[in-house]
Image (tube, rainbow, N blue to C red; front, side, top):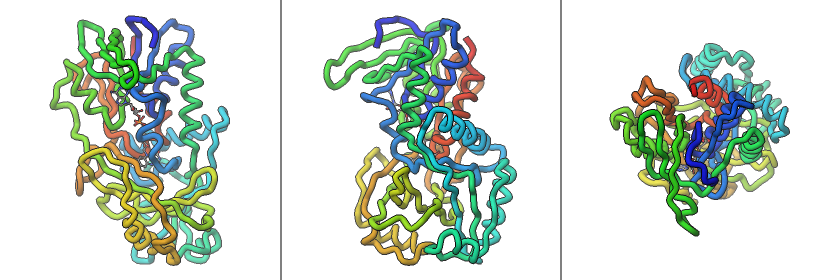
Length: 380
Ligand SMILES: Cc1cc2nc3c(=O)[nH]c(=O)nc-3n(C[C@H](O)[C@H](O)[C@H](O)COP(=O)(O)OP(=O)(O)OC[C@H]3O[C@@H](n4cnc5c(N)ncnc54)[C@H](O)[C@@H]3O)c2cc1C
């Protein structure tokens, strides 16, 4: 970190969202002598939620029409594909199939209607024979084909954002843990602990605009801002999702999703793959009290049972624990899904502060649209 004692804009958290935000702000203030810093507690970017997910570019099918999730996912998807093409980020628009039994056919049609209301107009309903042609190993009566769903190398994506932002003058500061923020007149005083594990040092600086993009720690950062009314900070619920790798050859050429169950916290244990075509299944949903990425290998049986509803030949022995991620949810177990919460002055009364809460899926897909949304609201 340089020894400057003030920046115009400070973003906390170098995950996909914080990085997209600094890139968008750097474009907005290009050649205007505006200083922007992004603080990250870890040694590098993207070590938390942004590297523990399905890496799916979502189409925007499920979210309620008019929600931020729907709007920012649909816009973000287009921005993300263009970004990947323009800057050579590895991705594949492989498409996705939401597969259903006859008893779920009506719900599948409702899902298509919801997608249309969100502006997703390219979905196609398939019958069993059409589905069999695309995916012979799947057992389902009907399916919804989403051609605009894809996969992305999220690490390369974040790397591209950081590179572009740094070229526009953004300062990236790893090993910088924000501990507390005071508000004085029109400025924030950001207190950081630098290089916590090797050579700890306290550092503080002023900034005019502060964006809290700290993912799973957004609430604790908010708690530390002296002027934020505590009752404006939404509750945080950790919801863990485990993934299991498939040991055999990947038999699929699309992402395969079951029908989402009503009021569950995820989209169902689905089949997704990375850029090297490694097939994996997940994530499940488990509300937990603390951050712990351990996976119980015995869950393979539960996974296999769930997956066998659409991929009948799967056995528990085909699955091996891969990795897990934790969703920063705003809704608790059994509660209706909550929207992204992007709080500006109107929500908490603090000028110059923008806070992002509940940035779960589709936050990766939506990241560039979220960044534009925020850049439109930052005024120096
Ligand atoms: C299981 C799972 C599956 C998902 N699947 C998908 C998917 O397929 N498609 C999709 O679009 N989205 C998906 N998501 C959602 C997506 O991963 C997130 O929305 C996105 O990565 C959130 O990015 P972020 O920048 O907000 O958070 P993070 O990546 O967690 O970044 C926050 C950063 O803030 C830093 N930080 C925290 N506290 C401090 C502090 N005090 N000082 C300094 N730095 C700090 C952290 O170290 C971290 O790097 C999934 C999420 C999960 C958990």
